[in-house]
Image (cartoon, rainbow, N blue to C red; front, side, top):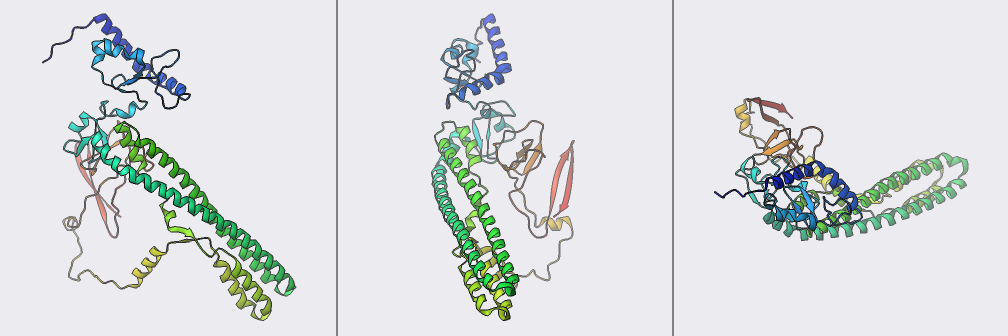
Length: 424
């Protein structure tokens, strides 16, 4: 057992007062520091400079404050402060502290995919697959290069697709205008006898042009949004690759490695048939046929107009579903097999569901390999994610349930265990 270090009581008392006042004024000092740091991007400023803010040299994980060279000296001079853990100056102090235990996050739980402190490892994450933050950072770092390459390739592909689609839109506008002019000239010559058909064709072209261009403009906007998002994500990934902070890297990696939400654009390409030339040819043919064949030719015109489109989606899924519907079932359930009737019969086909950590509400604490959720008053420091519930205490499952099924929920309330069943 180590001997206690003799302290100067007056000096220790003043230090404790200073430490308590540091906690009370931390939010105000950090707010002022952040406002001043806007003029000095990339620098962390001292929380204790009262006049001109100096650049911070170290951050204290006990005081949760940053110090310049002058104010840092107290941590070297006073024994009570010498035990504090100093790190390189950083602006993300709160992110490195466990929200539940108020301890430094030092490791990473691979079971729950979250950063943990020492007390977490001995409590709810006991027996989990836990590695040092640096080890997990090394594993994720190996994936970063591939992710950056894929990100750049996707940006290049989207830019090329945007250019092709933009060109197709202009061509459709020009072709539609040409078709309208041809329609005007021919149907004017036909005078009143075909005036009604002329109006039908005119409206047909305009309606389809509007529908086609409206969809194309929506896709253009989405492509622009995705390009902007991918560029920002690429920039964030590059910044993340240079950070020395393992916890900040892991938290940033989880929020940046998820899907972008624009994956459906992969199935869309610019179609080759975005010209109204076929429509113009059908209109010219109508002039020769006149009234006696107007019904037949109007059908041709309608088909020609609808053949004009800018984008074409992958028909793989539609074709596959059609084949599955047409094919007879090759595997049938044995007729001798009885339908399950009791709970014991149903349990023969049961499966465990894994809860999705990116969607869980912060007041739900996941344990037992993300198979159990416990509601607590203190929020857990999950990383930010667009899929996370922030109002109701909810969580999604990783697996999806299909066909006939039901789920059971084992709930513990005030020492009593209840089992709920719900059909789906």
